[in-house]
Image 1 (tube, rainbow, N blue to C red):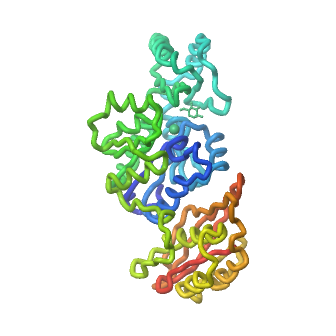
Image 2: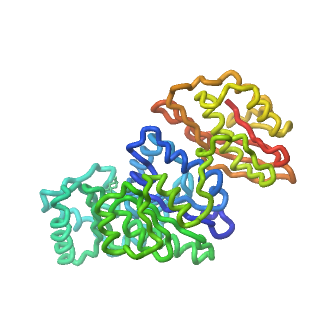
Image 3: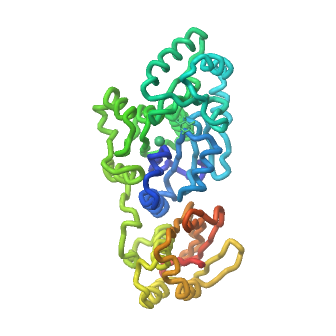
Length: 404
Ligand code: GLC
Ligand code: MG
């Protein structure tokens, strides 16, 4: 998070399952739309935080299944684990804080007395999180009885019911909201409090995100009953929280627009990608646009016309280079020419391309160095995982290009 020199323009703190990720959309279109919007307009000066109930193991699985970009901060296991950056460095201060007033053994002992509680998978049992499945109609009664038992044992815990089936027991000071409050505190101490924070969720464990002071919030259209009920009882008159009419990531984009937090048109929704704004050259935007064109070209969703290639060549710097992760450099013009051989080779296939961590650095008055990861999905497989591509380009001739 020290990547940004100043205050983030926007910090998005989003739940994953059924919020950022729509498990009912096999095409993952709203997620891909969000990715393109984030990389083209926000990556450079904003912070992306994923806040999930998943353990590190299940989070990594999700990243292999769905076309996701890389967050700056990952909050895992219902706000009990906070990690930073690509290598997911844990926040030890948070662990230390949660260790106070927590006794996992007492939780295990008391919960074992309830036959209605079915223990979740071993991967989901974490140092500060004990998780079960409970039938919806039993949830309230069990929560009450459990709270009483813990109180009698002098243990201050938080019991959260989510998704109409999951029951998590955490230290009282943990949870997604508390983890966000902790991050805000750290940013404030460094005078780097984000200018705006948008929290996004769909289920019970997201509720406390909406209670953090000064945040904007969106409950996606497909939010669970338990979150909507919580909202009706606790936050109905808060104009900073909306219930989107759009599902999942499309609801997040809708909220960005609703609260005027910045641009809210995804480049994926732009049909004419050749419409380049030369006067406000933005290398990140150009990289995103280029790969969208590349996807459409290979899916044969644009016409197979030499005109497109000629246009690409005309706007791209003759001295610009593409650097493949292997280290091999290729002039951008050659890259454009090689597009001829792959037109339509992914027609009718589930082929998607998205770029991740697009970070341009200006290295001269008319030269940029753009580092990014390019991901592709072909059918069920996502690849490559961690290739870093680099492009040199020039703002006077703005179009950076690809390898293929
Ligand atoms: C995720 C976790 C699970 C937890 C649930 C609700 O599904 O894997 O352990 O109970 O989120 O927080
Ligand atoms: Mg969710």
